[in-house]
Every structure is written in structure tokens, then in C-alpha cells.
Picture (tube, rainbow, N blue to C red):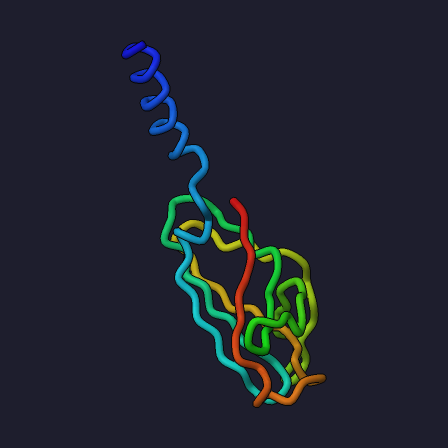
Length: 114
């Protein structure tokens, strides 16, 4: 019985490293402007991380979900699909928010994967 317990505990400890969360590797912040919200990401891991979606909230209600956008010519932003951050890299992404009054936007978030 003790052997079984030891095997179970060791198995759980080893499996924890296989399922590391990509959010643990990312430092991020965001700011809102009149037409876009800008997200800045720093990857602190030795693996590439992919930002799959950006989210804008009013309190706890989701206002908008979108794939990350990139800057084009001045004043123009476009959605470009998932954004890959190289190991130890940094990148900025955008989400268009011109359809909302910025005073109602209270939070932001993102989703990612390795």
C-alpha cells in the first residue's frame, strides 16, 4: 500500500511539469485609448507562447473578444490571428474598441497556449 502511495505521489509531482500554464511565463499590461486597447507582452520562458485571444470587459461582463490585432499604417489596425511571442521576446497587440465608450471599459485579459 505504501509503494502504491509513493508511486501515486511521484506521478503527480512529475506530471505537474508537463502541464505548465503559459500564463506563468507572460508578463503583460494594457492601456485603453479612444479607438484601441494596446496590450504589451513579455515572454519570460524558453518556449514560444501564442496569444490566441484578447478580451475587453466592463466589470465582469465580456464586451468584446477578438484575435490579436497588429498595427498597420498610422491609425489603422487589423486583426491578424494568433500572435506568437518568441522565447524571451516581447510584442504589442491591439484590439479595436471604437464601438464602446472608453469610460465603460474596466478590464482586459488574454488567452494563450504553448
